[in-house]
Length: 212
Image (cartoon, rainbow, N blue to C red; front, side, top):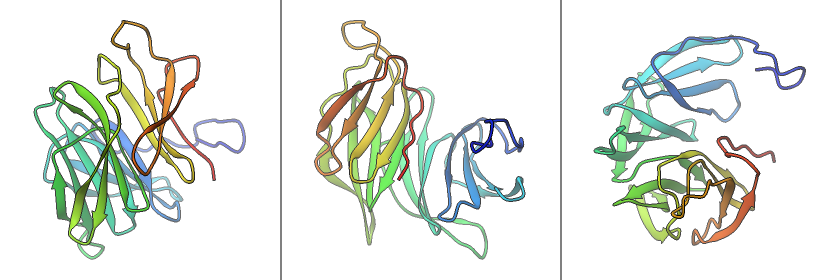
């Protein structure tokens, strides 16, 4: 979509079954697209609007992805019934286009990455929280910090975004425990994942983005 002119669709690129998440490489030339309907990540050349390759993963249903850098990628896997919940850190082998597993944690949902901090929105025994993990030399490690329970009766988490210098924003669509519709975006502290603010956006916040 051309955002500099009239927001018209510039090109359509076929990538595969159920594209549900994407992220860009550091210079904005490649888009990585998670295919929830399979076990692959499609790589699209933005300059030529073409599908250039697939990266195969070792689990089904990639739910969300986040590039750590041009050599590492986080992939969250979540079955529709919640029976399988994993987030994995992979290294991207530039010579073979293979993904090499570094480590994994038992948590899955919308994910975002900021300065070696990984934030995962996870449903743990019916309680939704934002969990903070660290990327260390040995892989993913739980930081010991998580948010207060987020009062929603369904897993209607639509988007998550790290905002440098501010915090982590989360868009939720659903109802609270009293049956009231949620029309707020939540903002959390990046250090201890405390709730900083509940932003009244006036409707279902299903997509988030930030500008430097």
